[in-house]
Image (cartoon, rainbow over all chains, first blue to last red; front, side, top):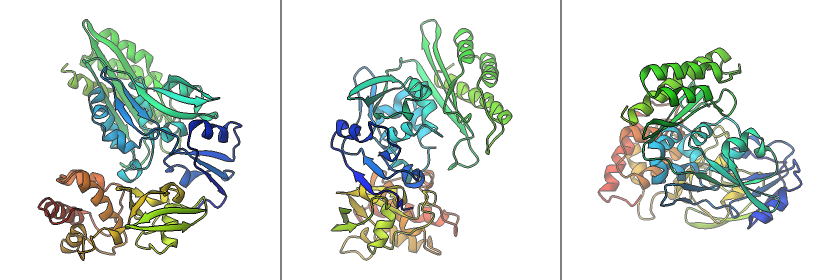
Length: 283
Length: 159
């Protein structure tokens, strides 16, 4: 619906020009990327939109070493249609992305806008499980950090422009899987989980177990990860790790689910993800 | 503010407020085939093609479309054709009941077929997941899109 309080629309040609619009942190100014969030939930105090479409890169590119760079202006559809991203982590990105909203939403929502808004996301747990980093523009310079740190330290709530998402290369023997639980396919998740396992010469080398919508964005289950790293991907090890995850991931009661139900879902979804990963790795 | 764009192949200069959505701007300028359903991104009745991709026009500020090409259902058929295959097969298959959701559903299907000329029924259903129809069970609409895909693969229209 129309936002009559919005009286000014800026189209900066560069990041520096965009930064000058938001540097003082005025609550009346909002950065605009895809628009799917602000069109329906712009706070009433917002009077100025700063359209980043001319300042942000929207390209997705893969390098020979297997790492992938995603311009913050890339739509979720562009990510879904980029073959190296489709293949990354054994197909976990499309597995998750087709469950995010609908094509109508994914065709306009951008990855930068999605991450910067910092709420209700199936994307975040998957990117954290893939060790994603983000690059942000702030105070006239660029800095990089893990997506996990970007969100947990609240960088997304301070004046900044998210410019790029970077995914490091994964080892050849690596697979990930994603599961979510929601009331309907179109609903926001009640809980989601993503697990990634890298194999090395001696067995399991590295594990990521990330749960989201707890209702917080993402929480790594460190004890469950250590359990798989030590005991491998056997059915009994998966059962133990899932139980540990259910115990250690903090959950809260909200209007869609109780904390107890969410904790149960942690256990169930982590088990499903780890089982899928074991199958993908031929274990 | 003024926003210059192309609607159905014709240049237009839209006078609008910076907070207007594309849905509101198009309807205010006579493009009433773009339906206002929920205005909240849920129903998909307002879908248009924005530079060839189907988007919910209620989730895009009109100013974002500066310099873009918009296609509504009125611009889907070529000048020499009464109907686009997707329009004709929707009629032939009985996919239209009240019709409110159909323009957007056809445009979404056009986006799909432009990228995937031979989608499975599951892929069609998945691509229509943001287009709600409260009259039907989607079966005839998916039939229609399958029929249109077959016609278009045989060269019946460039889509």
